[in-house]
Image 1: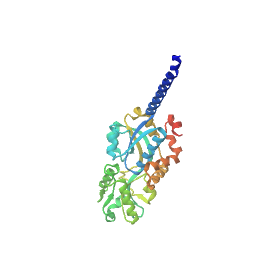
Image 2: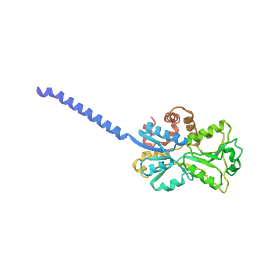
Image 3: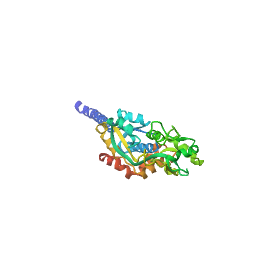
Image 4: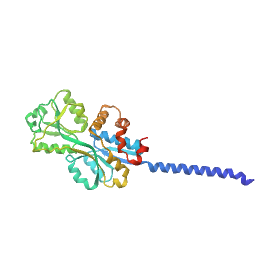
Length: 300
């Protein structure tokens, strides 16, 4: 009889042990499934927009923990080249970041283009009565002898200094930031004042204001059209093949990126909140970026 009395106790203990093992296995599996991504971007409108979009897609549809960090161009390249970050989201080639790419190319991997058809140069409101860079000296006083720039480490600032020298412009390039530049542009347009800024496309300002690029002379074409690439650390494809594949597949057309940038710029909500809403409204776009093994689980 004593044996029969102990049988329920034994089964009870085995049951508890089995449940504990199942729970532990589940926790272990959940930990193994959680993946990380560390992405660096420049505080420019387009980079802010699609880096936040990448974050919410990776988190919501691929079960990643994602950290995004804003940095100047030089430190961003350095972080990826040294393996401190997984990817730099905004390399402008062949012109703006040519020097950086040449310096770091042996320690980074090109994951492909996220946007095609970039344009950079000196930008003015369309009401400004000149059309060429070579005409700037003739109207120096109208611009107060200043070109409003962005952060000092940006490739467009280096090229603008080359333009000032090549065209012998009697102008000072004023360092600021992307947001400060667009604020200065907004104030000038509100007052119908003349202003010349370092500008690039894609950018929401071309949808908001009536602007034009000043034309370059044929023998002084320092700015060229190009593409925006995503650069990963050298061993990213081996270490995190799924992340590398996602970043390689990520691509936005001019219309898609313009729509996302305008949505973020015109909203008072957090960038991530707006990016998540855009993602939910454009499932057919982000679906193509997700590696095949994640498609079914990711898109539910």
